[in-house]
Length: 145
Image (cartoon, rainbow, N blue to C red; front, side, top):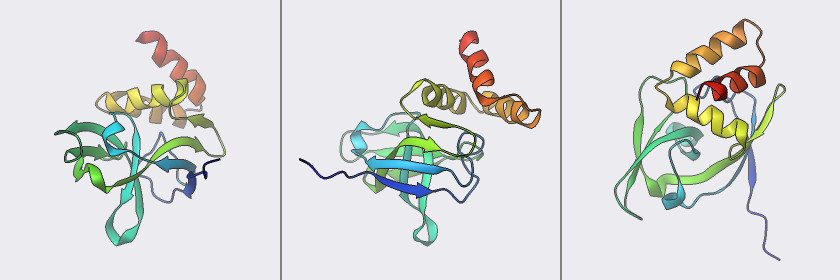
């Protein structure tokens, strides 16, 4: 039997709000950089040797030597990094309000919202401030698509 290579990280920052809350538990697995696609959340080493989890916006270049454009969901500016810098891909997000698999319906819907120029993310932030549940907001978002 193969050894389980998954790890768990706790988030500290707010760059992925509102889709990943500070204090969320991220379940990650080693990433094959060429398998990463827009919408995936990739983990890499950032400033000060901290592990950063940001969403893949796009990929540039060919296999093995390409680059990724990544961005925190609440950040205005993306950054570019070599595909080889990515260590992990987030598989599951858990926090005190909600848990979801990033490849499941909720995870895919949140990724679509985050990649839609932030318009849906701003709507989600507003909905959460007014007390609408995340599940109700996502269900409404999916109906309009």
